[in-house]
Amino acid sequence: QVQLVESGGGLVQVGGSLRLSCAASGRTSSLVHMGWFRQAPGKDREFVAAISSNARLTLYNDFVKGRFTISRDNAENTVSLQMNILKPEDTAVYSCAAGSLSWSLVNQGRTYPIWGRGTQVTVTV
Image (cartoon, rainbow, N blue to C red; front, side, top):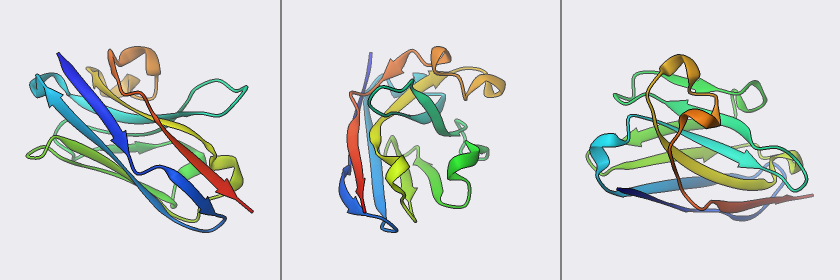
């Protein structure tokens, strides 16, 4: 089994930055494509970004393009999300996901069998 643990969330002012990290342990050979999703109170979970197993491909939701950067270190079994120019609408619980097998479906949460518990990001004005 694989466990994912997120860290790096917190409270930040509008325009600020945060760096989220997701550490994987266990059977890390099953990580494959990995992604970040978020869920704000009263809203559905939404895709944020994904990175391929070899880190050569990335995909972002339009609302984070140019502001967020996803990266991964396969030697350390970590995936990170650098978030810049944060906005109040970025406030949400951010969750790391792993195990998606098809790059064409990495923006769909249902394709990820492995999830972390999430970390809260709150952006204040």
